[in-house]
Image (cartoon, rainbow, N blue to C red; front, side, top):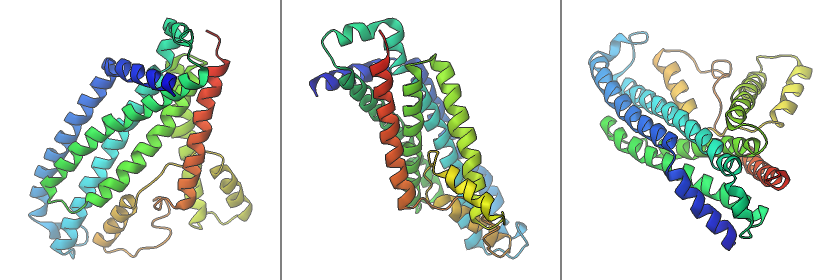
Length: 292
């Protein structure tokens, strides 16, 4: 435990010196402020004539609620993007630079076991990610006061989901960066997590909504869905979609919400926990097999 703690402290110090993390944090902080102020000005102009939207029969309270949800949705998207950027940055540097520079040789000669090294690296990476994204979320919470507040629970739920998804991405990059170049590791992770997994998840949602009538095809997507990581989702995304339908005067239906992910349930959360353990174990296996 002492070895992993020392590795974790050393890694946190090294991460604090990475300019790329500072750049992403500053961009995220400035972006969130600009987004909040810009949307506030735009929404003040738009809300002066709320009946000009939709079918002209939207009451002011519904429109105001829609504006709040839309702002929070944009805020969540921005937070998710910067959380992923930070996850990629930490995953690309936390282990790779020690292996590439030869610092890992001196660490292992302390002696520090491979398990302690991997545990310390993963722990420090998770703490660093939570700290940086947490600061951005705190700023986002303050920006939400521009819209009167009242959606704090939505922010909390989405923040947990964003951090959980970013941790999975970071672990994948960490494990791959012990075998291949860190940039290539990030590219492979992006293709796997953001492209392949995203396509499978979307098709699974469509199949579950009954859009795909072929039972065999639905079963195939069900199997594929449980072979990839599940991105956790809060209820805010579906709330926004339902508000949009209500504002436009439409009738909610399964097909209308087919492409909108439902809030993650216990099964998705359990699968996320399993996925984290698998990729964390993969980090240890990669470190254990790496020759230095």
